[in-house]
Image (cartoon, rainbow, N blue to C red):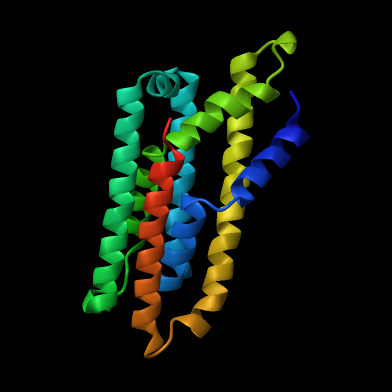
Length: 200
């Protein structure tokens, strides 16, 4: 098992712009660090769930059945579009009430459970770092999955902290509505990118 190489690969993958990065930055700019960190926890649990599912063959089943894969694609893109619409409505004046962390956690969890690209990582990338000759393949896969979730969570936390540091300068006074609407549009674009990038 090549742990340093895998950790570096996971870091490079997580540093590549994607749905989680865009969503966490947008959410934190709109709602603040506390809400962003709740979403980070949801992302971590979602990645863990997909990792465990892949260990038991569920993720491989999704990849093997085109209808199941496409169903996740449509559901994931639709959910992101719903989040974009919700952010747009918040910019129109429905976002004045303090946001709660629990909905952000649930939405981030759902977004990742509906992400076939995460399942593809566990199926296509992670096995490359398992060494069958040393035995204990399931244990190795579980450890690598844990490392991946830890690396992803660290990267996502840094994104939230950076966005929270910028928030006082970007989301302030009359600019707040404009920034919120730009963030809503960015989430919608992420939905389109997600739908196109996860096609088989």
